[in-house]
Image (cartoon, rainbow, N blue to C red; front, side):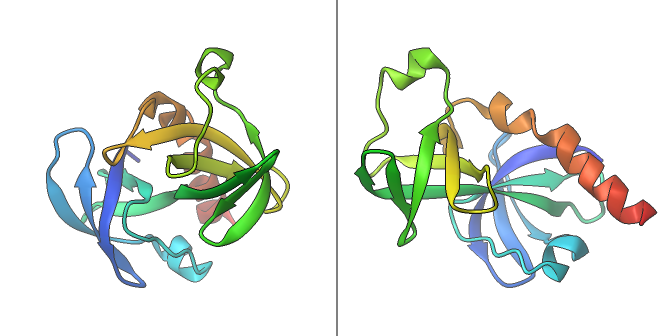
Length: 149
């Protein structure tokens, strides 16, 4: 598996047109059968992990990437849904608070009711792609478990 980051431009239920973050090229990529099986939906502007080792390159993971619609204390609203959240960015970055209108990359810590915000997105790119790339071993392990099950 050779994972790279891409930004979804236009998506259907089983594929997306994506822009590769490394070189800016645009390609069509199917979702992996596992993502289709579990009903993963990808919307434009979401960040994805694309496996360039597959033919054709295949989307293996979706990072929850959404604009902040509202903030109130430890509550954040993304895509019309309110969550409790924690700012998991490094302390130095937390000095610049997350604001309504920012696009964030977040992940669930308890099955969906609490989110950790890992990074912010500017011009369709994560500010710190290495934070998303750090998830590559877990993504690969998930697919490895799937093939041995």
